[in-house]
Image 1 (cartoon, rainbow, N blue to C red):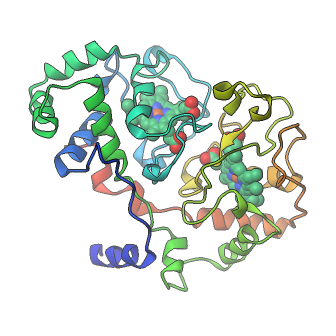
Image 2: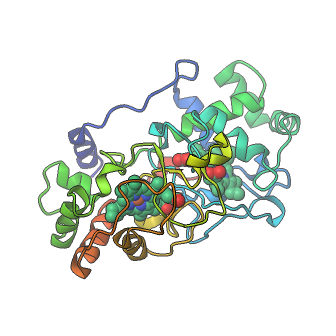
Amino acid sequence: MAALIGAVLAATHHPAVPIPPDNPQTPAKIELGRKLFFDQRLSADLTISCASCHKPEFAFSDGGNAVSTGVGGRRGTRNTPTLTNVGFRQGLFWEGRSTRLELQAVGPLTARIEMDMQPEVLAQRLEAIPEYARAFREVFGEAPTLKTTTFALAAFQRTLLSYNSPFDRFQAGDDLAMSEAALRGMEVFFAESGDCFHCHVGSEFTDDVPRNNALYTVYQDLGLALATGLDEDVGKFKTPTLRNIELTAPYMHDGSIKTLREVVEHYNRGGEPNLNSDVLMRPLGLSEQQIDDLVEFLKSLTDRSFTTNPAFQPPR
Ligand code: HEC
Ligand code: HEC
């Protein structure tokens, strides 16, 4: 079984995840990152870990919750994104405002509505746990700090790779991997009729570019404009990957769309008129059959070997 999956992975020829020169991957660092990712002691009141919101069984999203709950029951305003193949993302967070995983992790660790940790408290708390005191010295040659914590978390997250969906197996030559409906839906997705592939590009199903997909006429969350202050960036969010999309409902930056069918219906209508709507957003005129087929195609991007991979579960 493992050999078969290995062969399929090899056959699909995905590029290697880019590794920053200042944070090389090592098995001990990845294992430390995994421990930290699942450890509630990284939050102020010891109740929240990264995995409280990024749950493995939902492809590291928050299973059914439109927004997530952090320390003290505080709720955020954005949907928790999947971490599927996150090592490839060139922009992190919904509008892409962070550019590397090492820096991104400072956000959730210190945000009041997420883990609410002071850097000094984090360092002291980890140093007081002999297992961590030892592991940080072994991996980084120094005591735990905010920086080394984020470096270990980044190393673990770069291992979160998912390339074993029915779509991937079909690409690798297994003609029976996808249903007839999913194959028809694939044609709609990659043709001008559906036009999905212009934004959800390539094997990652994203161009990593912030765009306005006409979700609203008036946006509560300004998206990229929050970072740039520019009118033309209102309502722009990074095109999300569609890998494991079946597992990460509800959808969009605010979790406002409940099902994949409703997402496709949104695109079919051409979305809501707004000044920044992407030129690609227009009524598509898809038939009910084409809509159903497109949903089946999206479901063929689900990789169960990713959500059940023992290397991505809490360490024992
Ligand atoms: C309380 C829930 C919550 C916790 C805890 C949490 N996250 Fe997140 N995470 C989110 C939300 C919500 C976003 C999107 C925020 C935004 O766009 O402003 C996010 C975004 C991310 C992203 C960006 C993904 C992308 O493709 O843009 C990464 C990476 C990430 N989190 C990793 C982590 C790590 C590592 C931890 C632990 C240190 C963590 N998260 C803890 C909810 C959470
Ligand atoms: C103009 C570029 C563009 C086109 C064309 C486009 N998308 Fe999107 N898609 C986006 C952006 C940007 C978002 C995120 C918007 C937000 O969160 O407000 C998104 C979100 C999604 C989501 C929800 C992802 C999640 O994690 O919540 C799905 C599913 C989706 N698109 C499927 C499709 C399908 C199917 C098509 C073709 C019918 C399509 N998209 C066409 C840019 C596009």
